Length: 386
Image (cartoon, rainbow, N blue to C red):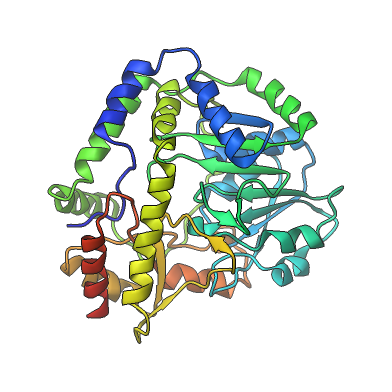
C-alpha cells in the first residue's frame, strides 16, 4: 500500500544526526539557514510549532482576540488559549481553503490583537491584502507557515511577510525532524522578550528516544509494511471522516521546551535537499492536476496567482469523502483525511459553513518527495476510476 505520508529524512540522516547531535554549532547552523532563507534577524528553535506560537504570544503580551481560520489544526487554538488569548475564528474561502480579506474584515474589531495568517497544506494565502487592512500598531500579523516551508508568494518565501512566523518540522511536514518548530521575527524587542521567556524552558526531548521514533517511523511507512501499519492504526484509532474534536484546556507538562539537538541536526542535514524536496512535491502536484482535470466527482483547490505552494499534500474536494477514501484503499492507496473537523465546532461556535464543509469533503493525495512519478500516476489513475 502507498502511504499517505513518509518522513523526508533518510536512514543515513538518522545515523549522521546521532553522531553529530553533541557537536557545537548544530543549532546555530540551522538558525543561520532559516534566517538567511527568510531574511530575518532572529530564529528560535522550539520543541514544536505550537510551542513557538505560545512563546510568541506570551512575549507579545497583549492578550485579546487572535483571528485564525476555523479550518486548521486543533493545537493552534489550544496554544492561543494556553497563552491567555482568545481564539476568534474566521470562516475560510471554500475553494482556496484559506482566509480572505473580506471575511477577516467582518470580524476585525478593536479587541483583536493578532491575525494568524495560515498557509494551509503549504498553499500561500494572499498576504499583501492582509497588510492593507491591518493597523500595524494594534494588530500583530503572524504567518502560520507550519506546513509551508519553502512556499513562495510573489517570488518571496512565506514566513518573511508578517511581524513573525511559525514553522513546523513535525514528521509529516515539508522537512521532517520528528519533532521541532521555529519562531522567526525581525522585531528586536519581541526577540528580547522571547529570549527571557526561554530562560525557563525545560530540557529538550531525549535524543535516543527521537532516534528510535524516527527509525521506527521509516520502517512502518515503507510500502512493503504499510498495509499492516494502516490496519493497526485503523484498529486502534478508528477512521472517522468527520468529527468534533474536544480541545485540551490544560497546558501539557514540560510544554515549554527548546528543540532537541538530534532533531535540529536531522533538519539541517535535509536543508541541502530542500530545493529537490520542493521540486518533487510540485512535480507530483502537477501530475495530479493534469491527470485529474475535468473529473466529474473531484475538484481542485484554487491557487493564488504568482505563488508556489509547498504541497505537504494535494487536497481535493469530494462529496462523499468516505466512499472515495474506501475506493482508494481498495486500490492500495492511503489518503490524508485530516483535518476532519472544524475548530469552530470544537469551541461550540456556529456560523462557519465553509470550514465545516471542508472538514467533510477534503482529502489529501500524497506528495512526499520519495513518491515516484510512476506511483503518482497510478494514484491518479485509481482516482479517475472513482
